[in-house]
Amino acid sequence: MDVLLQGGAGANDLDGNGASALHLAVTHGVHAGVIISGLLRHCADPRTRCRDGRCVLHHLAKFMGPPGVAKQLRNLGLDPNARDEHGQTPLLHATVAGLVKMVRLLCESGVGVNTPIFDDDKTAFFCAVRLKTVDAAQVLLQYGADLHHRGHSGRTVLHYHEAAYKAMSNGSADAARINKLLIACGANVNAKRGCCRQGHGMSVLDAGGITRAQGEFALFLMANGALRFR
Image (cartoon, rainbow, N blue to C red; front, side):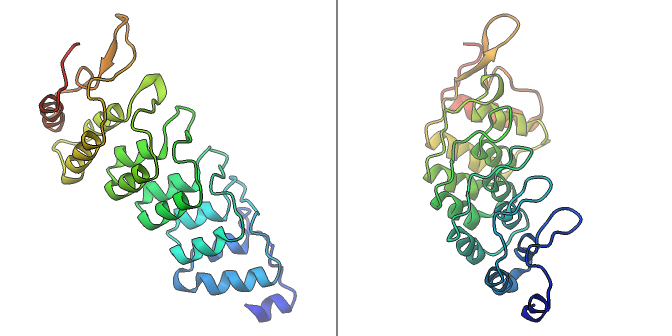
């Protein structure tokens, strides 16, 4: 690589998607650190963004780059809260991918754990719960994820968790772990979302459906103090 750069190849040249060599380097596994160091020696700009607004940290989190490279990039002062054109952050990508070490590193870097990611006010923690990435959810809680934050229409994290059950015909071990985690951390099983047509907010239990998995969830909620049609 040094030979190419010394021969005139540009360290900041972009490909057809607007990605720089640094963007692509983070996807090169165990060799990423060496490649990045070489590019930086030749004045590669770590703040370059792709056409979709993603920075190098977005690529690192999305494509499962090694945590050691994340530390290398963090030392360059990159913004861990950077948003792409869709409002998504590196923390969201790491959370969705279940990259626990990356989630932890971003949290240690001062990322806004409770910063809403989408227009509907969901946080990374909401996404971790809905996708049942349990270990990522635990790390986010350790760094201050707000159990009582409300998303679109006043939904709580339990409302989003209930919605995830609609996609399952049966419960799962990860869903059960999420259940216990939320209750142990103090989630309000009777919290109501925004108003419905009758003018009364709906609790998680009120909003439940009839699938077997949702039935299991309803029984779990009632065992932990949920009241139907409060």
